[in-house]
Image 1 (tube, chains in turn green, purple):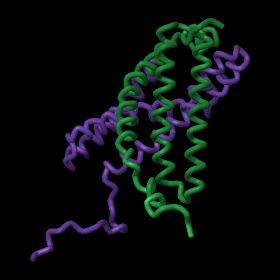
Image 2 (cartoon, one colour):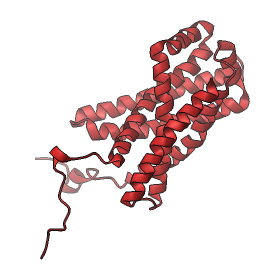
Image 3 (cartoon, helix red, strand yellow):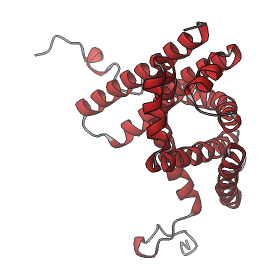
Image 4 (tube, chains in turn purple, cyan):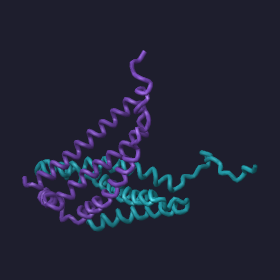
Length: 126
Length: 125
């Protein structure tokens, strides 16, 4: 005998009506990634070199630091949304699926924070 | 009622992959690959911030044969995912969904991604 009401037992089991926000988030972050990604690809291709001094000088430039920050956040968000769908499609079993999703979110946050910290350190002056 | 004109479901033994299916699978595969590339992106930034020693470890890994192959792979994955992502955004407006159009845009995306990858490494070298 459960103390939960019949309504309480079924609430939240459906789509929870938030499917479109994921769709929109993926599309809008994808459009942002197209612009930021092309800038980054162009920057890499035209960089004078990849020595430590050259990398530090590039990342520390205010405009580059700003765009790298935007790129890091957008990439983490877009990547998380994509990996989320892949996990939901291929990882079966409720517990393993939830664990994979949490692990993916942790990993994306760690990478984004590491990237942001590094850019700020070099941008603000190490 | 005549049902002879109805399409048959695919017989697996004679099924030929449509190119649109390959581009769809490749979109997901390159997306997962690029997510792994995010680790390298963060490692590049963090290595640079950590100092010359940490950075040289990173650079050494990237300049190895395996590193170079992976970097070429990531550059292709980026340009493919970019081109096919734009194709998806066009589809989202309701355009280009006819079978012939989708097949044509699939080939266009494949050619464009190879050309862009070649152009990237040509500018970089």
